[in-house]
Amino acid sequence: MIWQGICIHHSATADSASSSWEAIRRYHIEHNGWDEIGYHYGIEDVYGTLRLRIGRPLSMPGAHAVGLNATHIGICMVGNFDRDLPSMSRLDYLALVIADIARNYRLEISPETIKYHRDVADKTCPGYLFPPKEVLIRMVETYL
Ligand SMILES: [Zn+2]
Image (cartoon, rainbow, N blue to C red; front, side, top):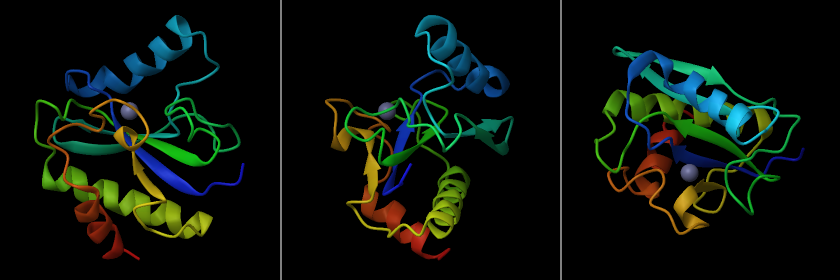
């Protein structure tokens, strides 16, 4: 795969701490019949502890956003940000993860390379309450 950017999602599931990422993985494998969860990475908040979860390997195209699966690494913020405001610590952690991936894959950070799912689909993902992309990009830049 030649990665050109990163696409951010929320799971839109209730933020039920520990089991959400595994529940998504099971759903994608058992219900959708996929080989792996559709995202490459996940970030979950387990009783206040942020965790990076590894999804499908980066040698596989994603299954998270039509039109971006072969070009953009998919990161899912576990939670429902149509309903809940993402905490600063969670956004900061996301920014750090994006910066690290960008360094490893030599990705430019711009509104073109950093996508929200809603940029390419008729969805709210990663949620109404997620900050504008320009804000997230500024946070990422502090780690580059
Ligand atoms: Zn999405």
